[in-house]
Amino acid sequence: MSGPLRAVDAGTLAPEAALALDEAMVRVQPSEPALLLWRTSPAVVIGRFQRADWEIAAAACAARGVRVWRRFTGGGAVYLDSGTLCIAVVAPAGHPWSALEIPALYDPLLDGMVAACGCMGVEATRDERTVRVGGRKVTGIAAHRGRYASLVHGTLLLDADLDSLRACLAGPRGGDLAGAPRPSPSRPDHVANVGHVEDAAAAIVDAFGAAAGELTREEVDAAERLAGTRYRDAAWHAGHWDGVTPQDVRAVLGGRAG
Image 1 (tube, rainbow, N blue to C red):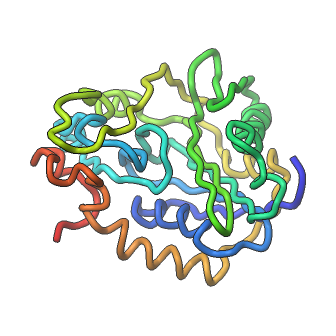
Image 2 (image 1 turned 135 degrees about the vertical axis):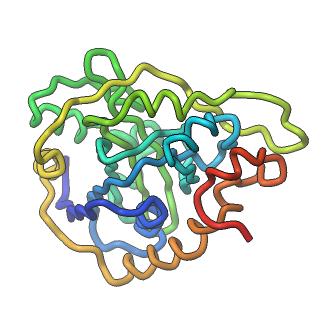
């Protein structure tokens, strides 16, 4: 991997703060590429173009106290908890990484994740969009190319609760559109945990050849604005399907109504 990376380990964040931070990284003009890491409490995060009631099992989410949040990038639904590490690579506009076309745009993150698994003593392989261990998916990705920067982010399953993952993501994957736009479906896959690693974040930072850094004031301010507006708005998490979202699904959406 080329170029210095500023590594920011944000620790454990509330879901709305974490999702806002990812988006904030491309809403300001970075001066250098960055590697961002965070964890969060149990949550389901759906892609920007997905319909919550087609992706989740509302009863399973409610029973586990899991709420459902929408991110600003596309892709499929994911289950997150403290056993899942979330990673993003951000490159300023004009950086060679930002000039890459899809699927090559995903390469820096995917290559880094394969290297990180190797640092943890786990043999991993990758294709255009995923990292796999023993044929099972441990990393999936989504991306955004913006005016100021490009971002590719994904997850690494370390010791996630796979029973909850399967239960919460057991949505119907279809139904009557009821006049709403057709959503983008998830692609169910076989997943696995890499296994508990004492300091997985440090291994990832080392694998990416990054140096510890801090968030800028502009990034912090942008994240706080987004967390207090978009990501605390239940209508954002319902998306284009707000008017047809069943009450049991609406009850587990992130944010606040009204």
